[in-house]
Amino acid sequence: MRQRLASFDTTVTVIFFVVMFSSACLIPVQSDTWWHLRAGQEMWTRHVVMLADEFSYVARGAYWPNHEWLSEVIFFGVFHIGGLPGLTLLAAILITTAVGLSWQLMRGPATKKLLLMALAMTSIAPVWTVRPHVFSLVFTMTVLQLALRDIYWPLPVLFALWANLHGGVALGFVVLGGVAISQLWIGQRSRLPRLALVIAGCFAATLVTPLGIHLWTTIPQSIQKSMANGIMEWRPPALFGLQYLAFWIVLLLFAATTIVRRRTIVTNEHAALTVVSLALLPLALRYNRNVTPFLLVAVPALSRTLFGERLEPREPARERYGLNVALMAGCAAACIGVVSIAWSRPWARLKWHPISQPIVDGIRACPGRLYNRFDDGGYLIWFAQSVPVFVDNRQDPYALWFLQEHLHREQSGEFEPVFARYNITCAFLPPGSPTAQRVLQSGWRVTASDADWLVLQSPNP
Image (cartoon, rainbow, N blue to C red; front, side, top):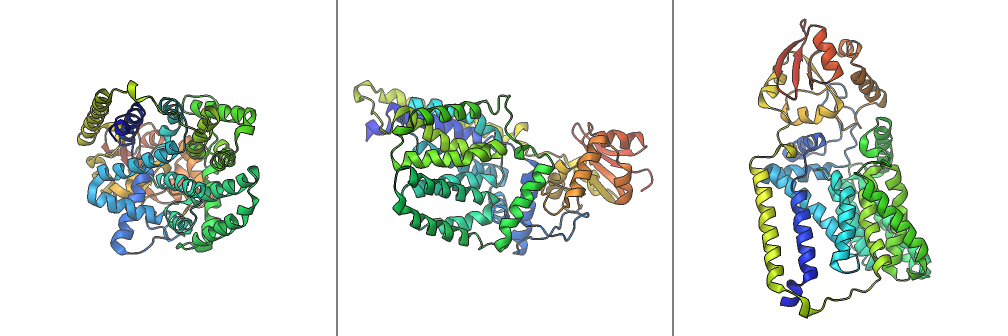
């Protein structure tokens, strides 16, 4: 027992996950996080599922296909108990669990596994945020783990839960489809009917949501809006740039080794990991938000192709158990200290206080309708709850033409037609916004300001 708990491989694994978990505890809060919290607060206190807009004066009452409603309730419940540290901790646990499930599927010595996973992390970590998509990372890997072990009975329950947590439930069917196709690779066609029944049952389970069958029409519509509006996470991964360098390296290694050593892919798990990776690859090439699910599956497949299916144990005589325990304890203590300091201050990178109280007071003092940018509406929805927003990045309640006109006007600074149409008398903008500059030139006065924000008011409200 002592040899296993304090072995070199165990030490490498523990240190990697302690550092990774601590890094996940420092992920920033995005604008999206705040409107998720507000929606969760409304549903938590009123015991309803929000399916209509209540936060904007432009789209008030419009249908809102809120397919993340359960995530929002959970987020607010955790926030209600543990505040932003608790919410960040939840996201960190989910992220670490997803990576842990991927690590469990890898083969080879811990040092080699560490090199592969550490490489992949440079493209995985930048997309970590406190948002419902962290549930999809865990569920993707959980469905894959269960399917690889022929444990199918929990899958419909998982899919029903997943469909209420996040629209990424579609990835679950990519995983199951890849597992089914892999049976043809290894000549196990007799298992296909059972897998087909499982997939049908999982699809039926996704209908147990407030959206019902409309879940599968609203998800593509939401993606279409995101692409049309140029949302960053719905763009292809950049060919050049540090963030996606690891993705392209892993992709090239995976493709080359799979082609060269395809005859060695004979086990059920190896074939399934390879085919599921190939199934996820087009999605990763099309939308960079799918780079992480691809890497979490492709890295285990790559490790098996490079290092084989067996794990060679390290010789006990070469182990230094006392040193290993000291290294693990020292790493854990250092990481706990860093996270504690970051949360207690808190560090600016966490973005726990994106708007100062004077700015919030200035917003609430606005005598009429307020204008804000697409990216900043989430802040207002949470911090200035009595003030309806002009727009926010939920997207779905707003017409596509409205969103595209807003983005075009914000880039050009041509505010007059929009402000006149909606009778806008105040604006909440960053100082560098083209609209802020044009508004100031038109004689609007600043009623509140700091280094990040301006609250402006018309001279003729």
